[in-house]
Image (tube, rainbow, N blue to C red; front, top):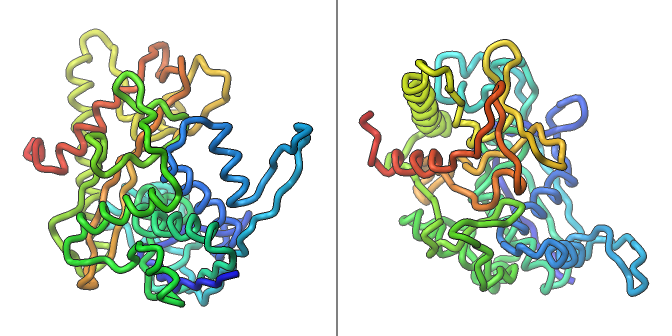
Length: 364
């Protein structure tokens, strides 16, 4: 059995806690996040095969030779410890910063909510065999450098940085780096490839008809034409400045698309909020919302395929990052409904947003 300990630091507020929304570190939350990122890295569209392997790595419900369900314990022990600092009035801090306020919208709408303050540190310890630990290490890399922890994790909530890890040789033997280098984009792409290799990512594409048909979110290979990753050229002194900058850009883009669509359709009253592809629920006016219809599932929420986050670079400065996930936005046959009108999700808006970040349409 091997033991690995990672020292981590929150670099943006983390909205994570118990049933009463009190801020606290919960090992079960981290296990769930590592499972999620493992699936995203794996990119296996055979769901039965995916679930069977996931149970072997993380534990869960499996079937024996007689097709009976049995509970399998996780082969890796995970412990989370930390001396966190708590806050409760982020809404007041966001009041004059439109970008952060927009990304942390629920905080300003619902008032005060307890959160873990940036600068709080924690230790995450993994104990298990090498063959399984490598999957956890790859998933942790993706969680730290591509995602976040807790509510609003796709909008800059709960972003982390690695302070250190022990023993160093065990991690380095896996040939994956937790220390960003000067060229952040190249470093991210290189280590994403290594993380996918560690989890045994599928070598064959699950794309059909020119688009990913996976029923869950996946990370395409960095060499793929579908790979979407943009990083700010500017380097900011604080996480707040970085998140505020990309938040304002995201807000402008959505506003432009809504206004343009409204102008095009105001004569025939066929306006439809296509920006629903950035995530559901999406409400307008007094209770009028974009909904999902024609599906066997009762879907009221759909996570955004776009992750906005803050990363800490090799100089100790902050940069924003925007990552696009692959996978079907809605189940087969489902459509978006707004009032009496139904429509297929317009995923071209996501392409437009990334083009705007690259500078192609930024001067609209």
